[in-house]
Image 1 (cartoon, one colour):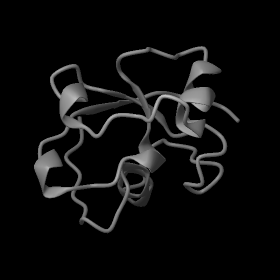
Image 2 (cartoon, one colour; image 1 turned 90 degrees about the horizontal axis):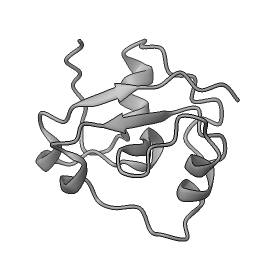
Image 3 (spheres, helix red, strand yellow; image 1 turned 180 degrees about the vertical axis):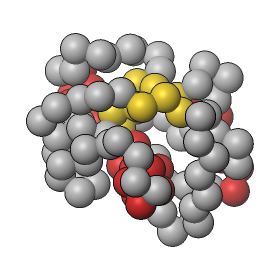
Image 4 (cartoon, one colour; image 1 turned 45 degrees about the vertical axis):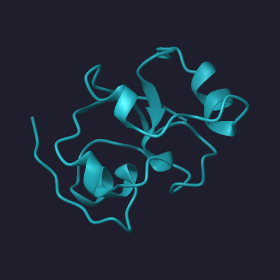
Length: 96
């Protein structure tokens, strides 16, 4: 378990990467690779802004062998907000 801190000008992917945790983030946060795939904790998933149904994020996630329709998100697409204080996330090892 890790406790990470970030500001409202960051994405979840940037915070995870900047802390040196094992997240590939091959595209650097451009929503082009899905290597920042995470599971949002079940208690938090409804508190995070939802994915737009026809989005590139959805398309990329659905191609992952680890895709979970309810919990999967790309960390690069989650912009940190004060309301996300205490957010629980599980990292997934994706490869590009």
